[in-house]
Image (cartoon, rainbow, N blue to C red; front, side, top):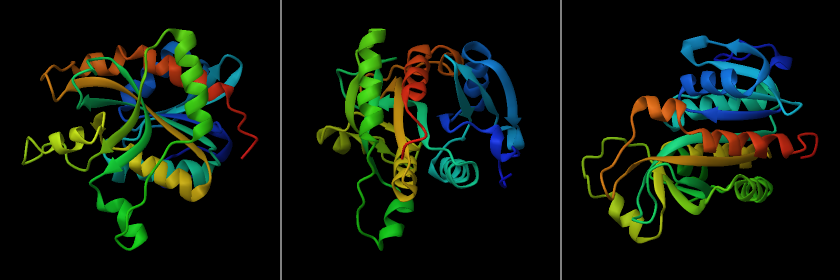
Amino acid sequence: MSIHIEASKTAVAPRVLLPGDPLRAKFIAENYLSDTRRYNEVRGMYGYTGIYKGKQISVQGTGMGMPSHAIYVHELINFYDVKTLIRIGSCGSMQPNIGLRDIILAISASTNSAIINRRFDGMNFAPTANWELITVATKHAQNLGIDIKAGNILSSDVFYDEDPESWKNWAKYGVLAVEMEAAALYTLASQFGVRALCILTVSDSLVSGEKTSAQEREKSFTQMMELALETAVEIDTSQP
């Protein structure tokens, strides 16, 4: 048992989906998993383990932002021996050709956060996804008929930016979208030698101003959920 997860060591599967919203974890557990049991409700951050297509899989809420996300990722890896972690979250599109509900595979995650570069004495580390997970997710996206976008995203520490135009500089360099967690996930996965991938659904557009509702973000992003589940269960978690 860790500080923020009240589960026994064997209660968490070696593959975990990581939604920021704990209610999205609950939705996935209730709608996609069988033989489901809830192993965590500390701070309302629900965690569940169940069976999907014959494989054990867990879903753990992580909250918003890199500090919260990093706590759960660190504990899952170091206290529960999790080997494959897939973030499933929402993001804001920075490109005119990426609209609401489009699916993005984050190959890499730029960041404006000091959480990453403080590990490297102020130098820049480039957090990237695991290639095996990218390859498997791409295959399953084709099988599911999902037209994915893939590339660099921005993991930001700031949701309400004092400069509402600051995203445009990132967009100029081809960054696809902004979210708040992936750079921490990829950095920790690199540090501890495990697999990580971030799959995102566009919930709003910084270009057009369009946005989805909180209920839609919780319950309607099912393409992303199904893609993550299919990807996770194909990975052999016994191999490094």
